Length: 281
Image (spheres, helix red, strand yellow):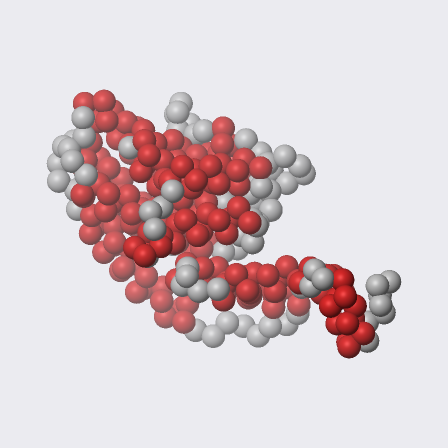
C-alpha cells in the first residue's frame, strides 16, 4: 500500500475487544452529527458548523465506531475547512478503515448497499464541489493527484467485495484527475453513472423481504428502516423514535419507565397502574 494512503484515525482500532467498535447510530454524538449534516438540505436550519462535524466524527471514529458514513461526513467537512488537503486526509481515513476493518466496519458487512450509499453520499457532494470550485493552485495539483491514488486504492479493494462494483468510484477518480490536470470536470458523470446503477438494482430492492422469523430479524428490519429514514427524511423524528425503541428492546419495562419518567411520584403511580412490583411502589 502506498505511503500516505491511510491515516491512524482509519486504521487504529477502537479501544476494547472489538477493533471496529459497535454501532454508534443511536449515540448522542451521532445524533448531533446528523443534526449538523441535515442543514445541508435545509437552508432554514442555519449555517452548518463544520468544526463541530469534524470534532464529532473524530470522537466516533476514534472511540466508538469505525463507521463509513461518519467517515464520509468527516471527509466532506475537512474539504469545507481545509480544501483538497482536508479531502485527502478524509479519503485516506476511509481507505484505512476499509483496509484494516472491513469485516467489522459499519454499516455491517451484510449491508453492502448501505456501505455503497455511504460512499455515494461523499462522491456526489465532492464531485459537485469540484465543478463549482476555481482552478486549483500549483500545490493543490499534487494533492489532487494523491487523492486520485487513494480513490483508486479504495476502488480496487472495495469493488470486488460489493454486491456489484460501484461505478461512481471510477467516475470520481476521473473527476479528481481532471481537476488536477486543469481540465473541466463533469459533476454530472458520477450522478448519472450512479443513476444507471440504481435503476438496475431498484427492482430487486423493491421486492418483498423474507418473512420475519425471529426477534433478531425483526430488530434488524427496524434498524434498516431507521437508517433509511435518517438518510431520506433527516428532519423527521420517526427514525430517532425507532432507534430509541430498538434500544428499549434490550431493557425491561421497569427500566424503560425509569428512563422515561424522572419524577419519583409519577413513576410510582405508573408502576401501580401497570401492576409492576418495584422497590419504589
